Length: 267
Image 1: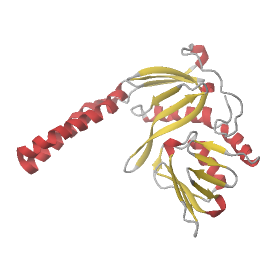
Image 2: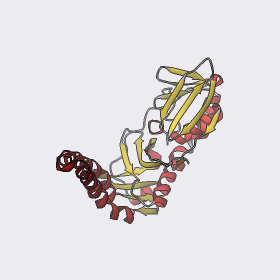
Image 3: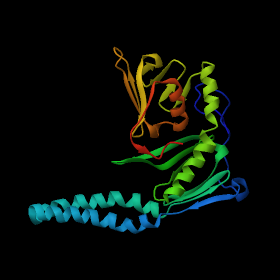
Image 4: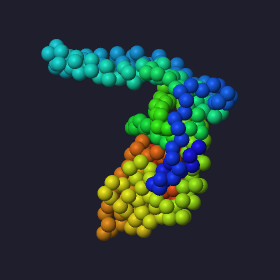
């Protein structure tokens, strides 16, 4: 595994792309075979059909048949928007092995060896009371990308897949990143760069010593400067590769305060 994908220095050249097919022995023993949550599958058709129907019926009750006729194409568009998201979950399957995983989506399938993973990103769904991980975006050293949905899996299975990837692909990078900062290196995490002095995102730079607070709330990293430096920086969790490593580094560099929403994104 390349141990510092976030460094700005050139470092070693990327490894060649991994072969497209791998044997079961490469992946190691099977730990978990995760499929669709049956309760979600039972709710899929009603969610796609009933919600748009309610919109049309409500419009007809409130404004007559003309309002219902106007609402119908919007309700149809809503159903069409919702359908791929739910239907893709029905076809989803993830087989978690000791050294990697196989996955199946509506649009295809793939195999990932954990040692080949260069970057881990986590897609987030925000609700009124919870922030949840819905997919893993993995990039290999050779550039191959994998989109692995975990929305729709049994909650315990989705959590197990997420934690296995974070523990194997992200967690080993933390002590190396900490040592790099101590040596004065600059580390890059997607749109953000950090060093022992400051964080910089785009054109905004905020030294740790001039920071009032930093937090991770609703899957958003937020940073606020002390007066008279009123610089405010916001960074979406999904934009940051190895976000759990990034968050742990921030806890050691910034005046950290805890967020307030439940989240399934933390390691």
